[in-house]
Length: 237
Ligand SMILES: [Zn+2]
Image (cartoon, rainbow, N blue to C red):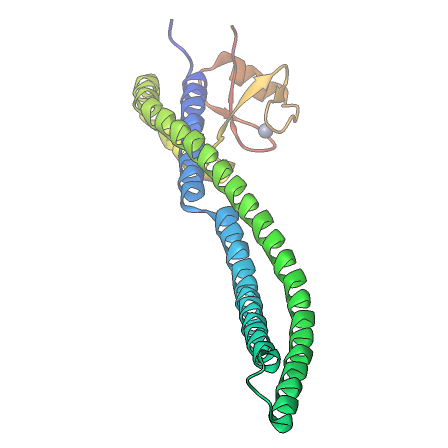
């Protein structure tokens, strides 16, 4: 049983729409695979936290070292002071002054150290949280990556079959019909053919006049929707 030109074009359009969708999705996948937006942002956050933390850690280590060094000096001065080798009152006074000044200095240093340690702890907590976020972003990206690669492979695998179906569909389409289809296609968003459903165009829903309905049902020549201008196909079955 032969089909009308409008029906043949409608079949062709169904196949072409699959091809358009496939192409669109393949481009989307290519773009998505090339983008690492969330991962890149999370990497930047980790980097910023590290940059903030590092000088705090260095400063805090230096303070600890200075306190330790002062403590050693104090102990040595203490040992000299009570060791009995120094008897000169001026020297003994100097030693006591030195111990006092070291003690005072260390108290100041310990206060600073405490402040830095609070900042270091906060910085470490921020860094840990951002590293966890980065790990999650990477895992999500990898999962998506696998999913997209899988989808891409399936789409590409299916394409030869769709193209084969298109070739078969073209057998029923006359050169004149194809010409009309091709010229309407870009202006009708890849949908140059609509169905006549009851008495209306399936695309724009506008009711057609009797002459168009009659011609569309007869299927002897191509008719177009009086509103949107699409070719109207009638499916009897
Ligand atoms: Zn229409």
